[in-house]
Length: 267
Image 1 (cartoon, rainbow, N blue to C red):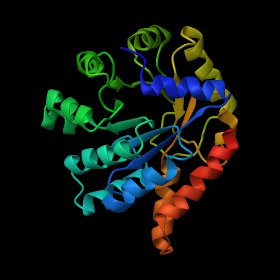
Image 2: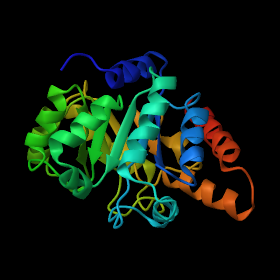
Image 3: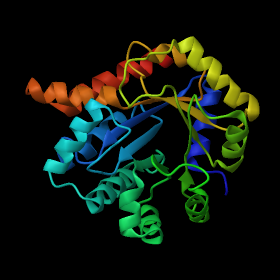
């Protein structure tokens, strides 16, 4: 796989001596139009953007992301809409990597080859499939690689060293380290120091692999992870959208302000 936009972005962040800021939003939240507006608005501060394609039973997602998902489902957002949002974003921001994230059920329903074809035509750079672990994902990950779509492997605190080595060896441009055994948006039950200790074990196996930390990253904790290759912020954004809607404020403006504050904390 030739050097990708994702890898190029991590190298740029490394030169700037800071972690990559990665955001997660749900396609179609709180409207399809606003979903795209939020992506375009925050792309000024964000290095890599994750966009969730919908699932009616998001098992790894905490309350905040579930709220976003339900709003999007109520809006009638489909997989086709997600690809449309992705393509519109990439047409306007060709140098910003966009990763689709979701569950295997929709990929299975679409057909793997068809799903990858749609990713390619929408200019998607990467893919995270939450419930398709290694080694079950090897064939699908290889299909993605052939089309220059980076398949992101997941690691957790319970991944054994033997398994970790194999997953890292098979990984593409980015590895996602789940910082704690919880759904997304849970309070950080483990001190950042301990998370970084676990994280350093991954980097010792292969220091050249880009590895990001996700789950429990908030405005209060993000500054503790400056030594990571990247940090993922998701639930905080979903929470901000919910809060804005309750206050009858503009979620696009408020999310933009929040993301800028978080970016400032890792510079």
